[in-house]
Length: 471
Image (cartoon, rainbow, N blue to C red; front, side, top):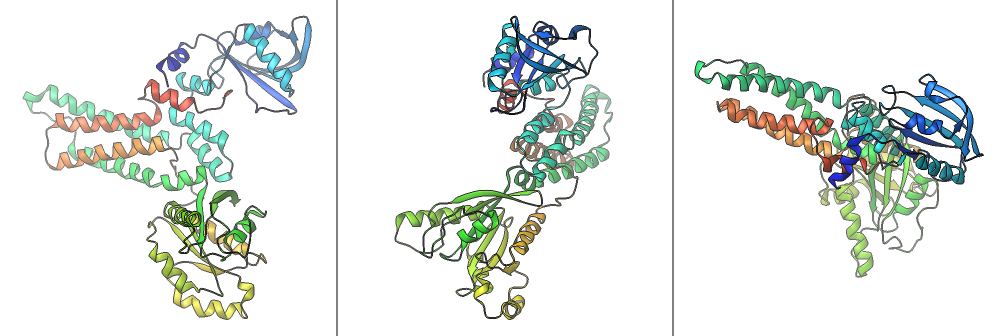
């Protein structure tokens, strides 16, 4: 992203305008203006009460004019600086949702002196004007993009400062200590100590513990934000595609008795108790001379290595939980992967309870397992419950503890953690204070990158360019 992108925004002297509702026809469509001339620009085309003399946070009904003609009847909401989203004068106009009306109105407002907003420019102005920090601004985009209760809760917590507030507090404490250490350097000949090293060790230990907690929360936070990557693996004809269709409650994947029908990955999403799962149906695992099918098998195994949840599906007339567990163990999946063994086609068993009792003790302590019939929709609710329970093992889904879901935040936290670890070692080795402060300052820098106290043009341009226009 070019530096001119930020320079243009930093001017903040022009008034920006954008359609703030999704494309397409709807009952209503909204156009938003923000900037020093927002009120006067709307006054020039609004036939109703003059907004320049109206009270803040007032609502007005009138006509939006196209020259001498009425384009539409509108409702106008007025926000005066600094009590608005951007902390600038802001006007929101609600039109009937005709795409033609919105296009015409937008052009009229541009002709009257407004400039078309760039992606994320309203939120960037809120950040630049101090209405929110950078982590909260990024949470705005996550909130808009959330498509499950879990992702919504995560974004809302971050928007309310769930991550930022504690980091700002810790950063401030580090700054204070660094100032005392650097003050010592100014009085080096007097051999005075302003910064208590015992207190410094305790502070850094507390910060390291908090940073580590946030770093470890990324796996759950990122999964909640993007959906839990869930891969279904198993032998050909185990019923993987039937299971996918049963979980989605639609015929998403082709089902056939012919082995090797599924050759590429079929993916879709569904929600269990507010948590979104990204479900992936894969090619059956077997040795094959068919090059295309072999590639599908390779992709299946690759996906299992990176999935948060792996469902190994086996045909109860062909395998049992013990052999299924042995096969899963042979895959050497990451320790972080949650595995479920599912015995499918249970309707073909003469006595399901006897089968379950026979294998419960032998499989105990390895992987959770249960019997289902995807075709007959038997015990599918039990599978959904088990999937949710396995995700809970990644972290407490009901907790309000802050989670991070942003790769940029993770990278900064890991860098800060590394530098503070160096400080701990420096204190133990009695390293001179001037060398110790280098790592402390570096940690302060990386923590500040998360909240936006330390940033650069390229980072800001990259973050806000990913927003939708109008937000």
